[in-house]
Image (cartoon, rainbow, N blue to C red; front, side, top):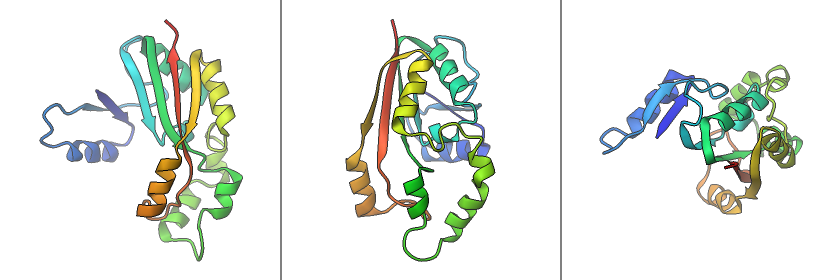
Length: 172
């Protein structure tokens, strides 16, 4: 298992969570759009809350397709973080928290316009996966996670929302 991120701080957090693990994954600095690995070197490519951040989603998907061995799977869990209905309720009742305000400033219209999937709907994401060569593309809503988030809360400055599990595979 290999994890990559461009942010060393995120890699440090991941390593810290797995101190003492008998078989920890390796964590490397790398760009999700163009991971530094040989073609056909993975059985699975998995991401969580990454799709919306991709500055060149078509290139990333083509590269992930190359990284997979025949029959390999692509799995992603993500939400529609910048959908119009999400924007309208992003701050929830009352004033925005400091974190929400920071997020809104960091991801202003100029920034979001450079992120291919930031406002993409489920159908658009699935179509992009198919265009990249993936087969058996699916998007399954995860209402059970929404219920858990509502019951137990989410990270400060975030609002619960329906997530989807996207799955596909590279043809044999």
